Image (tube, rainbow, N blue to C red):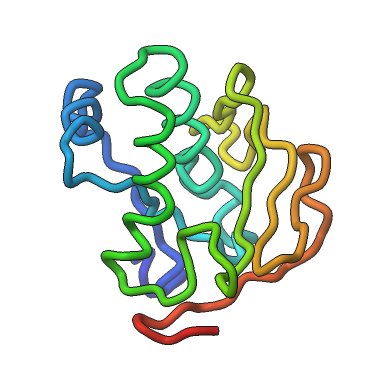
Length: 159
């Protein structure tokens, strides 16, 4: 059994959502954008996480905001930042406000796109120039610089 050999590292990719489903979800006023892509040691899994680990947010910005115009940019950003922070009660997150964690992403609207596929799943997106996590730059000039500044967040607990 896979579970006996790999334990909780076993992942499954299921193909049961359609493009129409995705568009309906994204258009719904109560939807938020997130990913259950898991970042973990992948050595025993042939270093192939689900492509959504690298591609969820760039896909929304590239495909659904820019390419199809399904939702406006401001709405997409709200669905990725403030709204999830509010719903999960993540104190001091999700907004650009004094005293809040500096979690920032700069991207080029006309260039951002996901590049991860099932065949090559750990591909960084295009058009993401800089990423700051807790005020520490972790992506510089579109490439991960080796910094790790993230931490587990607890509902209602401020850093």
